[in-house]
Image 1: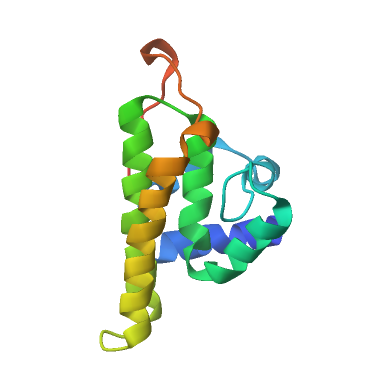
Image 2: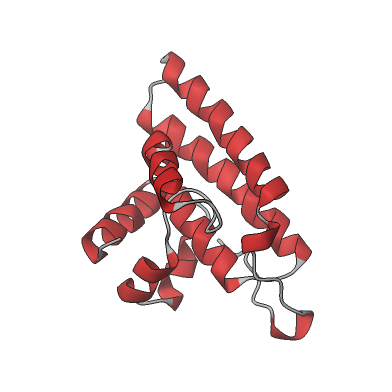
Length: 141
């Protein structure tokens, strides 16, 4: 992904007051562009990941935070927190995008929960688990 697109995702994350935006301060735009792979794990084919990213367009700012947290790594607790944060951030994005009575809002809220659960179930291979001695807490806001 290119720097202007990363900057746009960061702005959206900050504008929607997503949790975990502090993590962007640790990396340059070039590093963030290298870390972010769209929506979906590295082990799925790029074509499928591009499809998931288009299908889940609303969640891209949350996915950027999530990818950086996975790259940074941490403990089992940090892993679980990252996935729960993805859900909460996805819900915030759905609420920001759609009015209270728009049915799309509820579809996207449900999708945020489901995708966060998928991350918890299938995300272990992409998460960098580190020992307590070298870990950085991922749950700061």
